[in-house]
Image (cartoon, rainbow, N blue to C red; front, side, top):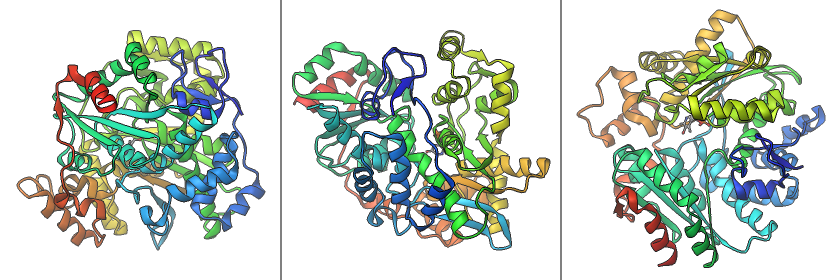
Length: 500
Ligand SMILES: *Cc1c(COP(=O)(O)O)cnc(C)c1O
């Protein structure tokens, strides 16, 4: 199966080429030429499989220049018990008296957020893709991060032969816990550098490094190529399709649904990657009734699904669900291509987004989107209330991002009377956002004045959940990355790290 650009670039790519390149030369995103399907028999057979096996089966349909055996060997390593516990992505019934709601816990990996699912596997896909495309260079992953992505990428690429990884984070823009997670990273090929400034300063520096042809040539002559672990890479999206297939199979296996029965999927959304993976699962043949796209106060997607106009010209809010604080949801471009099949209109809309900050889709496209997606948004009070409500109702403590999903679903359920079984993507461990979660449980302002260690301990006592090892050990780990640079020094830093 070949991959094409959403903007119609005149060349087709193999899966491994698409993974290595990341972005098409015309600025479009790679999409598969057609979407493979899963037959009823194939879905039924998966009832006897573990997650890593289902993952390899699903990936084999999209990445057909890899054999199923190759993929199985990568997924087995990526989703090992050592890294994830016995079940990497447990599907948990919310409440024994209610067989409608199920929570898909995607945060049992090394950094306690769902991005681990893709970023534990991507390094394997990337090095294998390099070998398949005959690339004889060392791959250096370059990333600017505002939080979760940087640490998940560091853990994924740590000590992987043939790779280096450099993460730039802003001094003023990551939480103390996120910073501690990054600067204590082990591994002989990991580099973490603070950039004086905000996220945009770090991001701009990294973008400049990618665009610098002189730097590219200099690194190439030393056998090094720069690459990105950003969520627009198909190699990050494809692994996420597998857990939606898995959740359907689990509901079948535990006899909560019958084959063919439709389910809803609720996803707290930022860059539109995670929910797009659910949409691909639906297109493959997983019976899905509604995809519920949950936004926080930065509700650009919610407005888009109700009006057909995507408009980023608006105030930006910092919320208690920071990983969803986004005004440009890059992966939406893929959905627009899939729904219209028209590279010309997609290119026009994306040009409008660049130049005017907004675009409007035609009524027919909007109708198709509305048949598949329900949008909604939650404000900060709503998120806090939902955390408390879910805890009172079901004894589950959820994080602030996951709470956005529950908030919107609760209103949807009341309004629509839709009784389909529903899977909630739970995207982060509540311990990762412990102060906001404890404020929701104990009252606004509760965590201020209390140390983060105290708040985490209290959250553990309240919820009965064990503190994840990677969070418990943070305070006692050695700080290994201390470099701080100015924003103009990003490219020089890349050179000095890679070429000495
Ligand atoms: C990245 C992230 C999201 C948003 O996912 P997208 O794929 O960008 O829509 C939601 N929750 C958490 C905890 C995240 O880290």
